Amino acid sequence: MPHVLILGGTAEARSLAELLAAGTRLPSLRVTNSLAGRVSAPRLPPGEVRVGGFGGAEGLAEWLRAHRVDVLIDATHPFAETISFHAARAAAAAHVPLLALRRPGWVPVEGDDWHWAGSLAEAAALLPALGRRVFLTTGRLGLAAFAVAALDELWFLVRSVDAPEPPHPARMEVLLDRGPFTLDGEDGKPGERELLRRHRIDVVVTKDSGGPATAPKLTAAREAGLPVVVVRRPAVPEGVPVADSPEQALQWLMSHPTRLHS
Image (cartoon, rainbow, N blue to C red; front, side):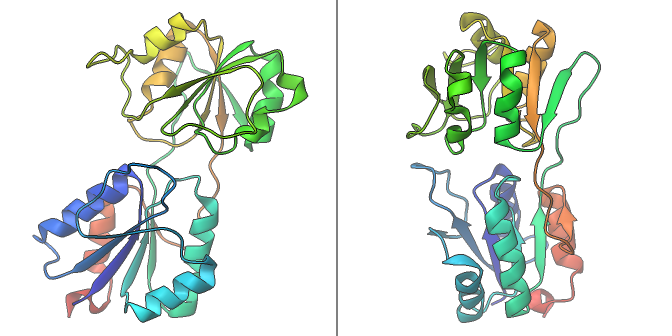
C-alpha cells in the first residue's frame, strides 16, 4: 500500500490527513502522521500517529527507507525551521518526493502599525521604544530572547499551550490557552479585545504564523491603535515545492508521478 508520511502538528496537517483518510480521490493509502511531541495533549489526526523526533536528517532518511515511504509532506509550523531543513535533506538522501504545506503569511491592511523583525531577538530589541505592557504570543519556546536586562522594566502577558520554563521575562503573567481565538470570546473564554483591555496592553508581539486561528489579535490591535511586532517566517528550503492549503497539497499528490497511483 502506498505510504505517505506527514510531518504535522498543525491544523493544515490534520486537514490533509482527514482528506486522505476520506479516500475519495486517493484510495488505499497508508498515512502516518508524525508529531514532534512538544505539546502535552496534541489533537490527534486520523491515521497512524508517531510522536517524537527522528534523530536529525540522517535518522529521518533511514525511517523513510525502513518504512517504505513514497511521499513526504512537511506540514509543520511555518517556524519549525530545523525539521523543515532536515526533511529536505532526508528526502533527497532517500529519493522521496517532498512537498511543503504552508499556510500563507499575514498581510497588513490599512490601520495596522506593524514593525517587522527578522528574529525573536530583533523583536525584543524593538519593544522598549514601543510599549511597557507586552502581549507576547510567540509560544513558550524562545522566551529566552525576552529574558534580558534591557526588558526588566517591561511587563509581559505570555500566552502558550503549555507552561513555559526558564529563562523567561522577569515580570510575566502566563495565560495557558489554545487557539482558535476570537475577537469577543466564547464559552466563557475572553476574546482578544477583552484581553488587551483587561491587561492594559500597549504592544503585541507575534510570529507571522498566518491562518485564521490566531489572527483576531491583529484585528484587536488595529482597532485599539496598538503597534504589533511581527517576526518574519523562515524561508522554505530551496527547491522544495510549496502548497498553501490542504486541498492544494491533495491536488499535488494526485498529479505527482509516484507509486500513489499504481
